[in-house]
Length: 394
Image (cartoon, rainbow, N blue to C red; front, side, top):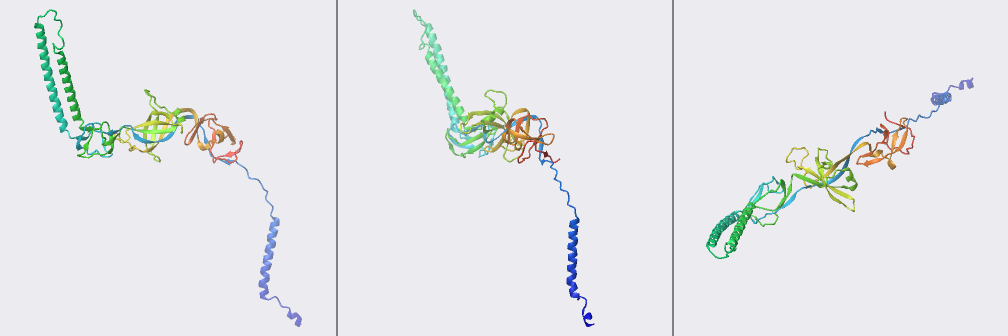
């Protein structure tokens, strides 16, 4: 009786250990049973729809050639300001400063003119004296001829030039001509005491002040024209075939030029090719064209482009010949050996040759040898082969 009573149920502490282990074992067994019951899915290879590419449609159209170059603006006319007579500066224009603008005929400065006015009066008096001397000699010659005619001599013949005073007359006529020339010269020197602008322009540099003594033939500044500017444009010699360069005496104008400052998107300026320097540099094979721009300082208009100042570095687009029935494609679409990639009607890649006519900054111009509306592949494709399946985003 004592042995039977000694067999007691498990304590609460043992249940706390055995029960979680039993639940964990049942869970593992159930998970293993579910895995055995799950059927393995059938594997299917993914469908290949083609490489995604970007395409553009080619259309034959006219294309105007554009030759891009750079150059520096300079004045078409530029002279040194030089007085033709010597003297002290008596008056200066307030605009006679560096950068001052003048119209043709405006007075720049005046030299003291008193001495030159006196010279004019002296020359005028010399003319009057020579006229009196000539008149007197003419009367003497008339009297001498009359006396010769009154003399009755056998075989007297014609009188000599000394008898008729013809030699003296010629001398007095020469004296009068010299006096008149001296008078004109003195008047011209008086006019030259006022130095005037020879054409519309601006003062580039001046080194003169009021009271300064100027010597004839010594420059006191430089003067540049403002009616027209020129741009020296160097470019590769082979580009000349696309452009219209006027020859001497030709009436046909040169190619139009679009001019802008680097990095600016404004309206810019318009110019024209006026001539070529006629030389090709042997080392660089570069030719130089001259582009003319009218009214560079916008003095005769209110255009939004602003001033095209002398010394400005500019970009120039020369508009050349128009090519008919050509196609334009981005430069990145041209492959090695002048080939292109085209997507055909079955979305397959085709590698085709292209007859390139011209390469420009961003475009390649080619003959229209491809089918009208052909889809040009512009996306780079690694390991591209003929017949590769392609697709587009749409």
